[in-house]
Image 1 (cartoon, rainbow, N blue to C red):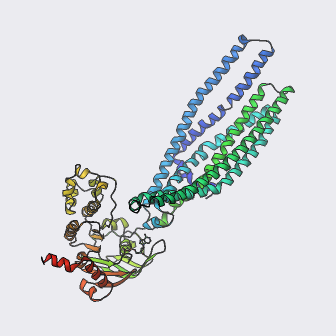
Image 2 (cartoon, protein in one colour):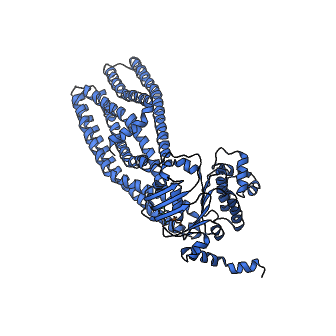
Length: 595
Ligand code: ADP
C-alpha cells in the first residue's frame, strides 16, 4: 500500500470530523507563529539594551523596555496555553473518535466473516488481535501526522527561514543548506530501519499468539510439567524481539548523533557568520541570538520528520494487515440467499459433496446422504472421520467444494443464512460459556425469553435444582460452573431457542452417567417432530436412532438402521463391537441380574 492509498483510505474516516481537523490545524498554525515571538523579542531586547548601554543610560530609561518585553512574553505564554489546550484537546478528540470508528468497523466486519476466514493460517486469534490493535493504533497516529502535525511543522520551519533570509541572505542560505542534509540523513535512517520494523511486527504477532496459546492451554502445560519448555519457547520469541529492538535502537542512536552533529555545525556556522557580520557592522548584536533561535525553529520541526517518517513506515506495515482484514470483505463475508419459508420441514440432502478445509485438509469425499425430517439420524465413525465437518456444512459454516447441500429441496446457498441458523439448535461437546450470569447465558438462545421460560429451559436441561441451590441462583457467574453444568447451560440454551432442527455433536461427552441419562431423557422429550442429527459414541444414543451413517476417512461406508448397518459387517460393526467390549457388557449384565 502506498502513502497516497493510505491517505485516501484514512480520509474516509476523517471526513466526518473535518471541522475538528480545521480547528486543530488553525490553532496549531497560530502556535507555530507564536513560536517565533521569542526570537524576535530577544533580538529587540538585546539591541535596545545594547543601544542604551552604549548611550550610557541606565535602569530608569530601560524600565519601559523591560515592562514591554515582559508583557509581550507573558501575554504570549498565556495565549500559548490557550492555543495549546485547544490544539491538544481537538487533536486528541479527533484521534480518539477515529480510533473508535476504525476499531468498531473492523470488529463489525470480522463478525460477518465465514468460519473459513478464522481458520486460515495467519488469522490465528493472537495474530488477528495484534493486527487489529496495532493497525488502529498506527493509523490513528497517521491521522495525527497527516492532518494535524505536518502542515504546521513545515509552516514553522519555513517561517523561521523567511525571517532569517529577511534579516540576512547569507545566514538564511547557511540554514537552507543544512536542512536538505538533515532531510537526507533522516531518509537514510528511516530506510535502514524499515526492514527491521517489518520484522518486529512479525515477531510481535508471533509473541501475542504464543501468549494466547499458553493461556488457553495452561491446564495441559501444568499437568505435563511443561512450564520450562513453554518458557523456553517464549524466550526464543522474546530474544528475536530483543535483538531486533537493540539493532533498531543502535541505528537510531547513531543517526540521531549524526543529525545533532550536523545541526551543531549549522549553529557554529551561524554563530561565526553572524559574529563576523556584527563585527563588520552589517548586523546588530541581537541578531546573533535571533538567528540561533530561528535556526532552532528550523531544525526542531525537521527533527520530528523522522518520527513522522517512522510512523508512516509503521502505518504502511500495519495498515496493510489491517485493511486486509477489512478488505477480506466480499470474499470472506458469509453469503446469504433470500429463502425464508414460513415452515421448515427439516429434510437435508447432500449430493456428491466434497469438502476441503482452508489449510488444505480434504475432509469429505463424494458424500451422499439423506437426513429425514422428524427423525433422528446418527453419524458414527472414528475420530477425524468427518462427522463434525458434515454438521459444519449443514449449518452453512463452510461451503462445499463441489456437489450440493439442500434443505427441504432448496440449496443451502439460497437460504437466508441467519434464518437458517435461527432454526437450528447446535450443542457441541464443549460449548462456549460467555462471561456473564447463568441466566444471561441461557437467554443467549432467545434474547426475548421471559424469566419463566429461562427457568423452564433450565428444568428441561436438569439444571434448575443445582442452580437454585447456589447462593446467587441464576445470577451466579456461568464460568464458575463445572464442565457438566456448563454443558447443561448450553442444552438449556437450545431448549429456549426451540428450533425445528437440532444438531448434537457429542453433547453428553463431558457429563457424568446420571447427567447423561437425564440429558438423554430430555433430548428424547424434545426430539418429537424435529430433525435431529446426533454424533455420539454412546451406544444407547446410536441404537435409538432411526437412521445411521457410518463414516470413515471422509466417506460414507454404510447407512441404514442399526440392524442393517450391523449386518453389513463393516466399519459400523467394528466400532459397535469395540464400544460394547469396552463397556464390559457381560459383567454389567451379570451385575444387573444380581449374579
Ligand atoms: P470427526 O468429527 O469425525 O472427529 P472432523 O470432521 O472434526 O472429524 O474432522 C475431519 C478431518 O478434517 C480431520 O482430518 C480433521 O483433522 C480435519 N479438520 C477438522 N477441522 C478442521 C479445521 N478447522 N481446519 C482444518 N482441518 C480440520
